[in-house]
Image 1: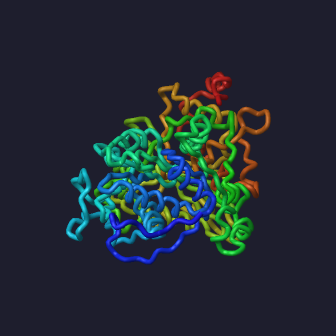
Image 2: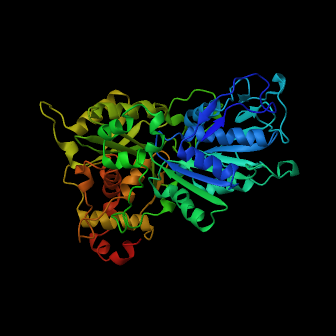
Image 3: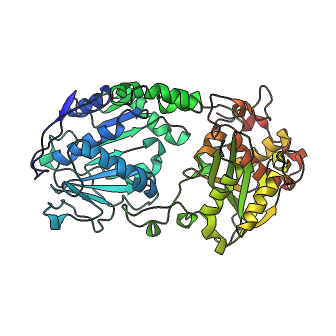
Length: 517
């Protein structure tokens, strides 16, 4: 299918040559579903390289063209995501269809002085707004700011990386605003449209998007669900790119998900049987410190509102030859809670020293509040590498100490925790049935691989207590998705709290209550 790039003078006041843009089958199906069939809810589950940014550019162009002076929403999970990924890809997609920044739209400011028309409802703050020449605006809404979408009356909604969006917040802050109505737009196919694109969901957080396939089957006149792998756009990709990606992929799982658009299989009745959505929380950045959508951003803990000042950090490590994994947590005595707030990992050929440096760089601002670290790790940390006089744990401690941190080693010089006791202690903690034990919460934006690791950790054979570690030896599973990350949580919780519970009382905890779907 071919579409013309040039738009009507309602939007463009400059002369541009008209050229045809060839759409691939995925893009054409999406365009025709709205343009011809007038389906308002378009959902596209597509792999890398399929041209998702291009088709989003078409939908934005159509919404702006069809509804001058209207208000639309472009939604992202966090403000950082909007600044670093959503806005750049949106600009790229719009340029494909002849919309150029500084000519057809401006970002983060009002274009009235440039002769732009004004929207029906002008915002009080233009810092997160794309203003188009014909008066239409697109408000960039981040779900980590619960108020960024409230009060809007929108005519259309577009969301990139939909599997990363938290549905409860999407519903409250965005979908409920898509209600504005004017008689002059009654024939617009984009009126009240909701367009979501994403690669396959890797965690339960994205199940709402995957489940929209069922909505499309139940109500095909209202919902459309389109799936595509990279082959749909092969003619626009570098020759041999797909084959190169297959050879260079770290695992078959990665290639299947990212290139072939094949959904990963989850685990039922896994090791973390009591793990539920309530154990996750959304990340909140300090919006004031982040600046505007066009300001530069360097990752740092100074933007993290879930970081508690004056409380030591817990550094939890799993050492390995192929990958070194680290989670960062904090224990609040007052709240009796352990929050896992950040994750880091480095793969071979990067070394452990690189991983520790990542932590040092990110958490430098926290030192002025508390420079104490509690260290938890697996037994491999007590071993010495070849030609080394120090253990891996000592190497970590020495580097952190040199950087100004005070490290307290909380890991006994012993074997890793026993399987049955670890299983029952952790699931008792997750079940939140014993007031002596803490609640556990995981930042799902800053610890995505920890969640994937836990949600996909099986038990070993018929043994309901031992975690199956086969994924750590697999060549088809990304090592950051294997059980390494889940182990960092195990070490932290077990070595902190095992003494609070008599193992004999743990053994009486009903296993049938733990093995849940």
